[in-house]
Structures are given as structure tokens and as C-alpha cells.
Length: 239
Image (cartoon, rainbow, N blue to C red; front, side, top):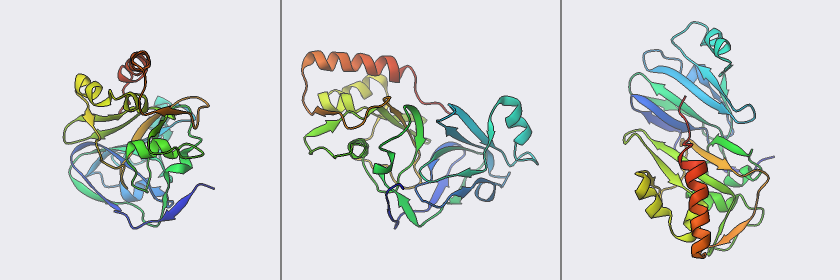
């Protein structure tokens, strides 16, 4: 079973009009039609299914919740958002959503995350660096940055832009300059809080590899090439 702790976290999410990336940090599933079933406020809700590399879809604007439309496009019908899953909401108007409270998902429960893109959420308030390190079976010391992920992203609705974290660039000291060069947003000390959904791109069959916080110039060059080829040109998608 995945690790869990008791929550004392925010369980409401204030959504502006447009696309918002949310997450279920609780072990209580979200019934999508119950929470997002008001067509006056919600256009669509989407969840990424990593095992299928495809989307699940729901809309309150259609009487069947979008079942026929989903089937015609090869999507799944979105019924629930389970523990630790992230999801997109396209809001027609601003509203407040009540998300589940209770036992929350810990970062370490994602140690065996699927390779490739995953849209997830946690409830233990880690920074991106802390989350990445928590994926190691044995957490590294503070001067070590684990190489568990290629990249981690979340969406800022108000700025219409992505926050980016890349462990390899963090390890060689080029993360801030790289983010600036691509006009992304820097997490800084911001935590991955309850109700926040975020994308991770995980390496295949890689857990617990560590990289010292300082690396050689040649390593830095190689790492930047990997990130620019695999990550920056393939930014996580909204539906």
C-alpha cells in the first residue's frame, strides 16, 4: 500500500475562468460529476491515464456527461479522480470546488511511477527537489540531488505559463538560467501543495540514481542537451 499521513491541508480550490491544473492529494476519490457537474461553471474536466497514454474526459454540458463524445474520440469517460492523480478543469466561470480531505498521499508512494509522462498530486507539501529526492528508496543526503526525474512542471493559470524543475539542471547549477532563457517560471522554494496537480516525466526503470550537487562542465553541457531535446520541445499538454 502507498504511504499516507493524516491531512491537515487545504481542501478547497478557487478556480478562475479558463484552464486550471488541479490534483487530488487525498486517499478519498473525487466523484467528478458531483464536484464539477455544474454547467454554469464547468466546461470540461480531463485526466491523463499514463498506462494508456491517453485522456479521460467529462463535461456537464452534455446529458451523458460526454460519454458518446469520449467514445468517438478514443477517450475514456472520466468518472473519478483517484488518490494522487492530477487533472485539468476548463472553467466557464470562477467558482470554488470542495476537494476531499482526510488521509493524504505522500511523495514516496510514487517511487515506482510509470516511465514517461504522469499527471499526479501529493499532500505532504514537498518542494520539487524534495519530491524528486523522495522517489529514491533511500533518500539522499542534502548535498545530493537524485536523478529520478527528467522534469517536473505545473501550470500557472493567472500567468498562462509553466513552472519547470529539472533535477539534472539543479545539480549542475544551470536551472535558473535555463528557465530564464526559455521564459518559464522558477519554483524557487514553492511547495507542491494540496489541490495542485503537476506533470512529471520519469525515466524508464530508473529509481535512486544520485548526482552530486556540483558536476563538471562537460556533464552540464550533456544534461542541457537532454533537457532541451526531450523536455522543452515536449512541454506537458493541456487537452
